Length: 353
Image (tube, rainbow, N blue to C red; front, side, top):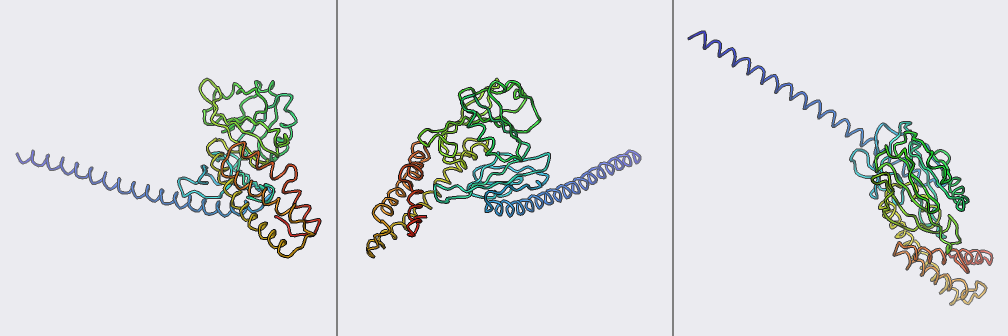
């Protein structure tokens, strides 16, 4: 009887030791995991802080391409901004980028351009990596547009220009994202994209408007596509572009809703900046009427400029191609703001902008 009791006590002691050991081990695992999470969180915050400083600084340096060594992490992007592993987004206003930034070469390119309509309205920033492949595809009659666009894109990014008849021969180069830019009606995907995830293959079709002088630096529409089943392109939406800076934005983003959101912010800024010039021009107009200084030709310059500016401000409320055409006409076509400003400068009069 005594030996049985002893055996039971030994078994109980072993069970107790196992449970206690497991609890102690679990405790240390939790501590280590917690320390790892804290360390990763701190690293993400540090990366975010440094990235915000660099992005903000680079955005102010227009017409300059910066090459940045990218940290070993992935950066996500949407209309709210750039985020590193779930940290609060870095809000930069008018910025365009793929929805996911990563690079086996650990390289990030930062590029900013002035968006002027015709007065400076905003700095557009583009954040890209060389690991995204951009393929410009053109039919013969659109080759001039395609060639010009190719030269507009920075030389550091991964870009290529192909005629439509060549697209079937394209091969996979192990890029994590591929963006096709089409000119013309022939829109198709090469067979190698069959092996890529749908969200990693996107495309746009560019239509340049004759009402904006048929220029890439004029206006037109961008139709956005994503890869669907059976390697077919699925249309996601169509939006206008105004000047080459917004066209480039449509090239660098990979989601239609991001382009629309960023451009609506830009149009809102255009309205705000235009209202500043409306107030300035109105004060100049009234000043010269009261002072009687007719040499500044107030009736044909400042008064006409007010009409143009008011038209631009009112058209900035809606992001549609008809509104964009009207803005371009007031800014750049016959008897436009740019000409008025130049004429005032020649007459040594205060400028509209």
